[in-house]
Image (cartoon, rainbow, N blue to C red):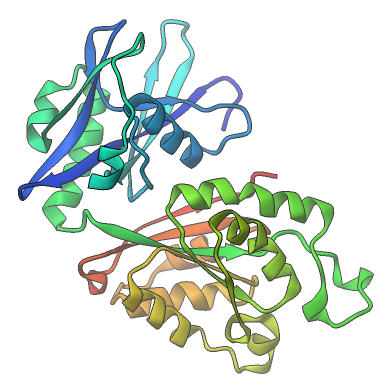
Length: 312
């Protein structure tokens, strides 16, 4: 992010009703316009966290993020550039029933409308572009997705400063802050299952997330660095199970193992391999890549990959 630009995030919130695809438009009170839910990043937030918070604040609906659908850029009256990141976001019927929205000083009304009709209803060209990108997912039949998140463990105590077994190396103070910082963005993507190398630095990285979710950590030596060094790592079995399960999950591992995890995701989904796999697995400590896969047909290939740097 640049210091001069204003950053914001939001989403194309969608649902299926009686077999029809509907998207949610907001009617803003002050501007008397029709647009997509979005808002500015609060201090300390990631863009993903901003998107789910703003969608909830403006619509009363709690969502998890799906595939990224574009970035809009435009000049504000103050002459500063505003950069808005958007994701698709499915609204479940339960979330809609639990919405506490009432008309207010910011949002006058919410309107569910057919997706293609919404394109004509938007007040601004930038929102039209985002909806057109969203409709490409619809046309490709890959709207409903689930994420597999590949996470590199947070900053750990250097080997030269540790006298015990390598598998026992703990996180540093900065690493513990990084572990806490990934909780919000990973929850924004709806992660529910937590898998980790059995090394202490990986387990400690996902421990705050597991606590926040009320979930156990599934520890496995199959994606540990010791197993990778010994040539006994088994990334294929774990990835195969996660793709078949079609459930949001995070897999925390080590730098040399990450390329194998990404490669196995590509193979398990019949995705053509390319340099993008190397780019998305070259992660700093505490960084992660979100791999979006089709929930109805995972074999159709990777839909999108987005990489998030460490916050701390």
